[in-house]
Amino acid sequence: MTATGPTPTGDASPRGSRALAALKHREFAYFFTAAAVSNAGGWMQMVAVPALLFDLTDSSTWLGVSSVASLIPAVFLTPHAGVLADRVSRRKILMVTQLVQMITAFVLWASYTSDNVSPELIVGLGLVGGIATGFQTAAWQSFVPLLVPPELMLEAVRLNSVQFTLARAIGPGLAGLVISTLGTGAAIFINASTYLLVIAALVVARPRQTIVHHGDRKVSDVLREGGRYVWRNLPLRIAVLLAFVGSLCGQSLQYVTPAIANRIFDRPSTDNAGLLVALGLGAVTSSIVSVAVGDRIRRSTIVLVSLALFAANAGLIALTSWYWLGIAAYFIGGLGHLQMAVALNTLVQGAVPDHVRGRTMSFYVLGILGGIPIGAFVLGRLGDVVSMRFAVAFDAVALLIVIVALVSRGWLRQLDTSRIEP
Image (cartoon, rainbow, N blue to C red; front, top):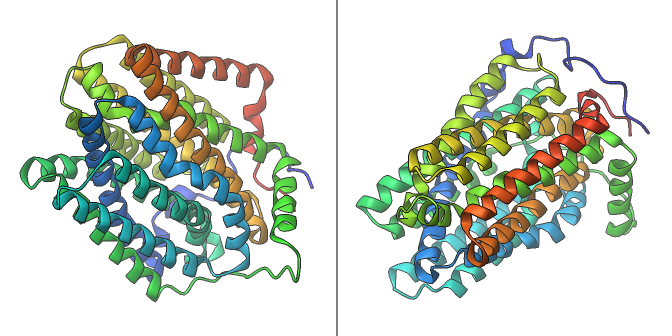
């Protein structure tokens, strides 16, 4: 019914000393490797396609529209997908969604190589991919713990964040190299091809999922039950709120990097690759710290520092016109993003029982997926109507207000909870 009291460090076991133990399990190791390669391909496309869209339109608003199209479907679908993830095989959900995303990537590549690409097509394919994302994300997040024994669940969750972080560091750098030598089409083609690795890893996976049977109960009833569970537990409500704020004011900055590179730093839009590489390197650095430290630092402290790093990221971008300081700012943002993601993810994954994990994760993911398109659209629109520098400064001020509100109300301490009863 309610959460247990806060604990200083979570588990007393020395998690940091066995942080890589999950990789000794073959199925998790296969999935980890395939996901890392595929996510690196996704980040390559994230560099290539927004830069292409900005060059086609010379509009940061279009960047925001593209983000809305690719993520808003997930906002509406994710809660229902969380119910689905508790009722059917998460493995089968992922196989279908990965196949859909692979097809959209190949269609985009074919359109680009045949010189038939347009802003409308990019947005339309993003919409289809967004629908797949809506069904996929909660299943993916709640699938990872099923590949290892229960005692290694949090290590697997942490390593899943690390592999995404490694991909974030490697993908943009590879994109810059591939685009400069082979062209934008090659980056899109590579991304499309990497989905095959994840599909292959899913074919051999045998997760230990407990399928929840709800009889003839309607999906809407099961969804409301999951919503009530999240709502009546303050730590989960705060986690969802922070997921929204972190994506609204933090992660959204990565979706308008072509406009920031061009309008603030007076560089080509494709120099968004350098900014995203810095973001990834910051996250990699942060992930090393996360794996080494384990649970020895309070989640509340980690999240507070992460929000401060997000604010520093936006503030530094707004105050400078020097590209290399912009790179430093995105590095700082990467430090904050990984720490917040791990802190909130381990709370939601580790504190709730498996039979409600899919639905709980869906509301957490909903916060993330709801914040990014809104933040990206607002930044893009303000960038066109006022200036990109004003838009980023506005973002920094908003983060500072959130920090003051959270600290003054003492809400962050709720994140130190280690168990939430059903």
